[in-house]
Every structure is written in structure tokens, then in C-alpha cells.
Length: 267
Image (tube, rainbow, N blue to C red; front, side, top):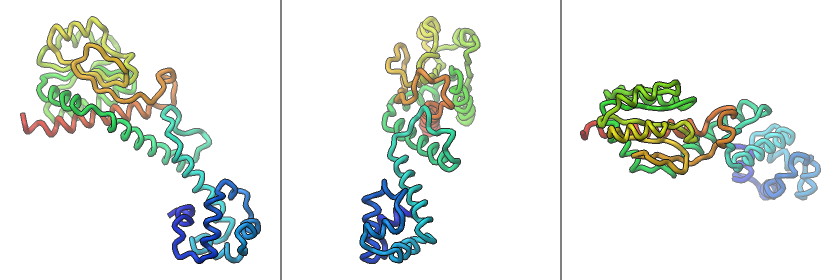
């Protein structure tokens, strides 16, 4: 338990120690500058009583207690602030702060996506993938990394996956796609999606299309798996990393793979 948590628990505290702890909890903002004499006067106790309380929670003395208490208070305040998906940490943050903030970001991302997941669309996408001869995956930028990882997983399902990038390969692959295939498009912002003429070609061929994106409106796709937008579109290409968007996409692809893996024995 942290120092703050031990103060809140007041386990095995005497009446005087509980009075000291209660005062500290009610005046947390003042503790950074509070001297032991000032605390003793405010709680009508003594320096010796405060030292005994500090040692009861395994602090060597009041100075160590106050430093650790302030750290605990600041940490809790950070935890209560919503995660900034565009800038989860800063240069001044310590390694332990960054580790905690990345953990909070990942946890918040998964929770946000889970609560918004269109499960029926995930099931439909997984079913189509299991029925398809070839799964074409169109992705650009950081999303390409997730696309490659997903295509590697599909090998375990004995499915053929083809990655299409932004360098003019789309037309050639799309002309080869047919009604027995699936085209999956991955784009956080929705800006890097298939051209309209490619869309029309796929529709004529009967190739099923799946979009994974945070964009509000998506027209022409057979299945749309949308997750909430939490990163700024304006700074998308300039931020330190695309933590939220790529964690969301990875989560969605893992869900599709998991559902498809479960379905393989039912086909």
C-alpha cells in the first residue's frame, strides 16, 4: 500500500494518530509545505506522536513521510485526469511516470473500444474472412504494421492474405479480386481509403468490403467496424506516436481473428 492508502486505512492507528491522519487527508494540498511542528500544532498533538505514526507506516521520519505522501497525492491526481491520447507524456516525466501513463493509455483505449464495438459487424467480418479465398488488406502508414501482423495470423487459419499499400498496387489487385474474395480497408481518419472507381469495380465483381475506421460516415462498404475517435485528425501525422489509433486497430483485428479462429470448426 502507498503512504496515502495507509493513511486512509488507518489500520492499528491510535486515537491521536487517526486525528493526525484525518487532518492530513483533509488538507492534502498543504502538505508539501507543512512542517512537523506546524502539523503538531494544527492537530493538537506532538512531534513525537507524528514520528510514531510515520514509523507505523514504515517511514523513517517525517521528512521521508512528507516526500512520499506528496508523490502519492500527485500520482492520484494524474490518475483522475483523462488520458491525453495525443500527448500521453512529456519530456519532464520520469521513466516510471511514462510506464504508468502508457499503461493507462492502453487500458483506456481497450475499454473505449470494447464499449463501442459492433459485435455483429465483427462476426460478419470474421465469417467472410473464413469463407474467402483471398483477403486483400489495404492500409497505409502505421496501420500497415497491424495489417502485416493480421495477415501473418491468417496463415494459421490457412487463409491467403495480400497486403496492398499506397504505392499504386491497388488497381492491379482489385482487378484480380472476385466474388470469392474480401477487401479489408484500415484507415483511422478515413482519409486513406479506396478510390471511388475501385469501390465501384469491387461492387461489380461482388467482392465484399470491410472498413475499420473512426470516421463517422462510411458509404459503400458491406461492413463497417467503427471505433471512437480520440486522437486529433489535425495533428495525426505530427504527434509523437499513434498510440490510441493503432492500439484500437490491433484490438479490433485481434477480435476478428479470435472470432474467425473459433468459427473454423463450424464451417
